[in-house]
Length: 261
Image 1 (cartoon, rainbow, N blue to C red):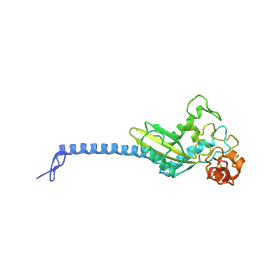
Image 2: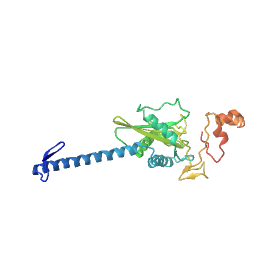
Image 3: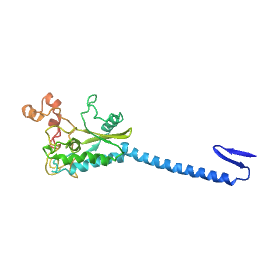
Image 4: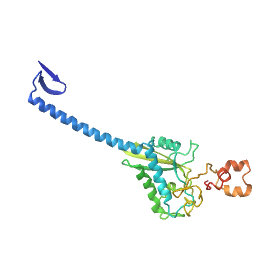
């Protein structure tokens, strides 16, 4: 009596195997093993990519924050008012929603109550977040403090990374076809025309009682809505409803907070 194995052209007797059948079966087993090894390596590669793209991981968030803060504390000349940056989930969700659309352009400001800064990065291969933030910072070679670009080349990615009052960051990444799209969004927004990214001076000179590793740890929780607030305060003081509405940072933050507008 004979039994047939599906997709194996061998015939087995109840108590005896033909030698040719054993050879064929062994070849098939070897092929299956090689296929398994190939799939294992493919899955391992996928897991590596997902680590780069998945910013819900605490380790990934810490990598992004640490890389920003490392560059911020090492600016030259040193900064007297550089805030320590921290992770923000709202910004991260916003950045992730944008990169998921794969439009490969800056996100629109309209339609959101947050006026945030943004850095983008596009790559043909998956990159670590350390590589991404370092690429943004590399524009420092084009920058002269406090005047701006020395050669007409871009500096905005660098200045956003080291903008003194940008103390919250959230990031997202997505694979878009054969490309990898990365974005970080920042509060408060940086890159105001004609303004240096920070004040030069001894580290933490403006926050001597709130300093950790050359970074200030006392951000003002308010945001001024007018660039003319210092002049308005001299004219009107801070008792009017107008000033409390338009210049809350200047009026509400005491000397314990650097004047982060």
